[in-house]
Image (cartoon, rainbow, N blue to C red; front, side, top):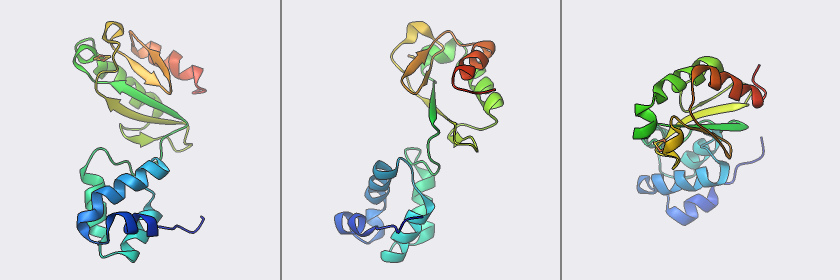
Length: 152
Ligand code: FES
């Protein structure tokens, strides 16, 4: 792994625990998630303890501790999708990928998250995979949709 340079985070936001949230936001903006080695280095170079930084990172849902998969799946949990059975498709995605919400498959191919309204409620229940939107989801449609992205 390349040498991690955390100086800019500390320089921009400070070295005390009050800087934890902006530092984590900046790391996530750079990496797309919060790599453990980067967090560890921040703690080494600042006054922020590991337990505090990891506590903040796990408390707020905006922070991701695992990288997104090659195919990022966003399942809508907005009201219209919920009423039309979003829970069924959430279960189907979890079962077929063998992961939970906010996790990434071991091969890095898929990650799963839930989001609020995707803005196409008439298609409910809806999922977005990368930039593509799929509506009227059912368990079988989840399977056929995943196949398009290389899932066996
Ligand atoms: S509630 Fe799901 S797209 Fe609007």
